[in-house]
Image (cartoon, rainbow, N blue to C red; front, side, top):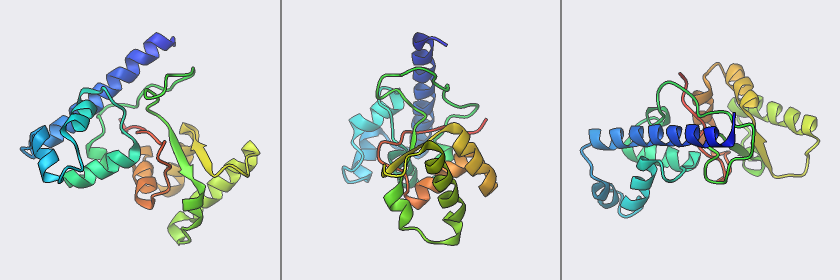
Length: 179
């Protein structure tokens, strides 16, 4: 796939995500300025509008916060029917819609049974990659698929768990919804 085609596919996904964001907002009978007012200025109308037009990428953390503001699960904001295209070449910053990065310092603070499998997988990935010093660990689609299988969920369900556990680094960007 050429970079031009990837850019078009990423733009198409961003517009589909924006359409979902707009649909949820309008279902709640909110204008863009209404979102800004209701949120006490936390969500600026211009920023939400740029997400809805697909002009601006939204991080996983911000998407989770917006879902909480709207009172819906994260996957309700994700486009139906597919993933953003997998990229095989470098895509300009701001267009890479498939990046998840685990904050290992945050993960180390979690000691509950529910995160045991995540900690084991992360440890194995770090050994395999030979990267034991970096405090951040990028997660590939295959890694996320493995985690989803271990947790008996979908990749979007696993993404929601990572968001709920607050282990994603700020540079993480929205992944996808299941078909």
